[in-house]
Amino acid sequence: MTTFSASPNRTITCIEPETEAAKILANKWYWTVAKTVATEGSPDGESNIIWRAQGFAPEMDVTWKTQYALNWTTNLQTGAEVKLGGLWVAANKGEVWNVNNLGYLEKESDAGLPGWLNIGNVDYDYGGVGIHIVVGLVSDDKNFEKVFVDPVSLFKNSNARYQPLEKAQWWFEGEDKTGQVYSSTMTSIGEVDLTNPAPATGNYAWWTTYLTGDGTWYNYQQPPMTLKHTSATKELVGFNPVFVSLSKTVGKEFRQAATKWVKTRLGKIYNNVSVEFTLVYTKQNGKELKVTYGSKKSAVPGTRQYIGFTLDEKDEFDQDLLNAISDGADDEHFPRGETGTIILLNKVNGFH
Image (cartoon, rainbow, N blue to C red; front, side, top):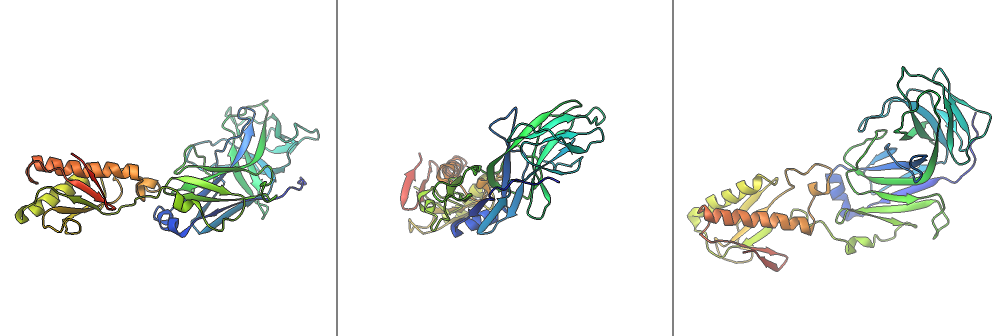
C-alpha cells in the first residue's frame, strides 16, 4: 500500500456577484476545472481532461490533496469520456511503476526521478494498440478522479514519466463534461499556480471571479469583501431597446409595412425582434422607431454572445438596423432618402 507524503490541501473558490448571476444562469454555465500535468514533451505542463464541473452557485470551490494515482486507457477521443482499461494504483512522486504483461500496474523497488510519477516499462501488448497513461487524483473519500491522459501512445518496452503540477485552470462551460477530454473552452480560462502559498496570506488558497462584460477572470489572494472590478469593467449592453429617429415622417397608412420590413430583415440575423413606432424622444407620430432584439441566430448557447453584446458588438446591430431602414427607403417602405439616427443613452450617433 502506498503511503502518501504530507502536503497541504489546495483550494480555489469561485465567487460571483449578483449582477453576474442572471447572465451565468441564462447560459446554464458550469464552473469547470482542470489540473495541469507536465510530461517530457511538455515540461511546462498541459491540461486535457475536465476534472470537476459544478452547476452555478454564488460561491463554488474545489479542493485537492497532493495525492496522485495512475491508470491507463486505449480510448483517447476529444469530447468523449475517458474509459479506463486498467485498475487504479495510488502513487507517490519519485516512485517507478511498470505495466506487466497482463495490464496491471506494479511498483518497482527502485526509486525513479524525484518529483515525477515514473513508468519504468510497459510489458503489455494490447493487440498492437498502444496504451495512454492516465494520471489521477485521490479524493477525500478515497476514490480516484481522472485529471490527465497522455496523448502519446506507449507500446511494449516503452517508458515515460509524469509530473503533476499544483496548477489549476478553470472556465465556464455549457454543460457538465466531467471526465471528458477537451481541446477548447466556452469562455476564457482562469489559472493559478498553488505550488507555493499565496504571498499575502501564506495559505494554499485563491479566490476568483468571472465578469461577463469583458470575459475576464480576476484572482484574489484573500476572500474579496467587494468585487471591485465589477464597476470598472466593460459591461454587456445586453438586449436593450434601440431607438431610431427618422428624418421624415412615415404616414400612418405605411407604418405597418415599414415595421414589418425592418422586422423581417433583422429577423434573418437576430432572435426575438420587435419593431414599433413610439413617441419617447421625438414626440412626433411616425418619426421614431423602437427596436428590441435578442441574440444572433448564429450564437451558440453558452457563449457570451448568447446573453448579450459588448458595445463593439452592439455597433454591428446598430448598423444592421440602419441598413434595413436605408434599404427600405429604396424599396419605398420608408420615405425616399431616409437614413435614420440611433438614439442611445442620450447620445446621438448619426449614420449617413
